[in-house]
Picture (cartoon, rainbow, N blue to C red):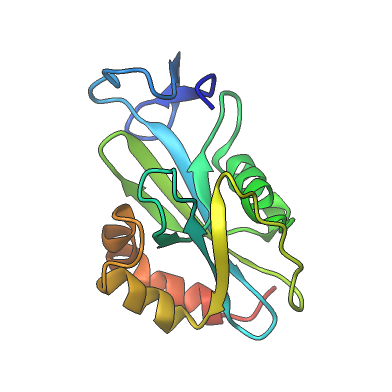
Amino acid sequence: MDDELWDLTDAAGAPIGRTHRRGDPAFPEGLFHIVASVCVVRGDGLVLLTRRAQGKDWGLTWEFPAGSALTGETSEQAAVRELHEETGVQVRAADLRLVGRLTERTALFDFYVAHVAGDPVLALDPDEVCESFWAPLAEAMRRGTAGEMAGPWTRRLAHFGDRLAELVTAPRG
């Protein structure tokens, strides 16, 4: 993915007409790219956790499926694409409910919840994900506190925890 291009945005998420190539040094100070993640909730209320492939940053730690928006993609489009690429789970942008946005060092991190019917069949991308686990949200929160989630998730879960719990347990509709 060294040819992956991201739109650069201002602090409000508005594209500024420039791109940044993933992996290039010196990410421009004061600018951001969009990263989107989805907490999938299946019919019985369990949420999907994925374990990052060994060769990735934060390898063998847990997370909710996530990734950077590519040039020209909205946050929602990136969330839908990344979820499908990593897990095989297909949702529509209309299925996403925004938990919130968190400003990180070089990223505006958008977190969504998507409820899916039943127990979806997973097709994990081995370059991205080595394992998956359907768990109660409380288990994901515990893993965040225990340091079992990828490093950035500790802050993310602390920030989004209450709103995430609301949306995970809220009826679809």
